[in-house]
Length: 464
Ligand code: ADP
Ligand code: MG
Image (cartoon, rainbow, N blue to C red; front, side, top):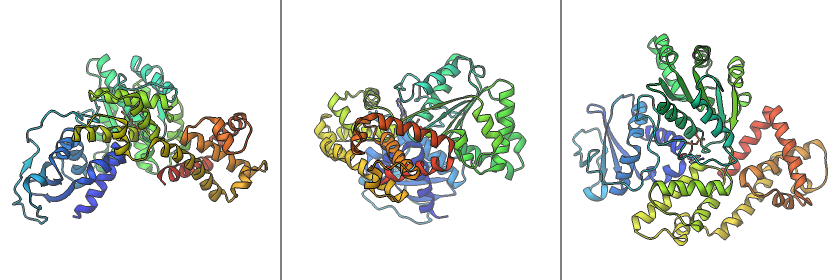
């Protein structure tokens, strides 16, 4: 068994659930140093007690769940070896004699940073940290929020299924759990299940392996509310889709509520059976978009408040303007700043935030300009037109498409005013951009290939 591969797989899963910022900040410092299959114990080396405590209080269930899955064990013991305190290097061998210097039950002092309690601490896997109360509503998510709220009032009746889609880190999972939590408050003992589609797939595969498909399907058919996260992971898995289709129909016909999230609209999920697509299309579809700067600031303040920290306007603005397209990333930045202030006992000032996150606001504004350039360059390379051609008033079909695509990505990625986008393209006013965005939205809707192309370019640009 290759520990390194398992650890990398584990980090990838955590990256999906908690975001790469969290992984970089906290998990990269941990070494998976030994797995003892007899005592079912995982030994993890951590650089200091701060990291250890933070992980124990925030991520222990996730460690157990995902490492357990990867190691094929239902129950695991975790032992954290605190390097500074032991002052020793941990042996990496097959011996089971390693002294558990600090085990998970170590005195767990009061944590200030209590963010992101992991999922799956309950049987129905609903995370009680994600509520409507702590979800900030802005123009980017108001439809999804209203719809989510509405289904909790009349589950199974109003909008069934409810389908919420949007890019990663924009609050879909949060809304899903918030629905679950609200229904738990409204009803006595509702049968609710939160399940990610990839877990659904792996459960289904196990069910096949052990000849237990009817048992597997029964578990779902008895539910009142089914919350399926990231349905796109069911793509190209025909047999799983068939099973899901049956479960869906059973629930739907008995007016049980189904809520599904995805990274794109049903019609744009590649590798989805037509009949399932039609089902997903049949209810209410609501999107979540990139938040405006005001919403980002409101989110930061709310999260800081949760940690009993007060974030000044200037610090909130600084952090908000550093993040372009993901609330998960925004949260990661905030955690880094709070953790640093906490560790060093320094006040939460703008200067501290700048030190932790790097780049002054001025440089960051520059970054946004660079982003316009970066987007234009990426589009120009992809569609094979020079920047001059794209900026010209030429209107042949392909140039127009590329230019519109670039404007669309500029709006989506930087969320800058249309007038600024217009001036980058040497256009007189923002109405050209409005027109371009509308045109491009239309093309994206009717042409899945272009839709996918642009989503890929988007990912490439923001990861550069
Ligand atoms: P997604 O499922 O769309 O990838 P998540 O629901 O996991 O995104 O959200 C990422 C993080 O951002 C979570 O910690 C979530 O609480 C937070 N978040 C997202 N949207 C909001 C919001 N509108 N208000 C408060 N927190 C939010
Ligand atoms: Mg999610």
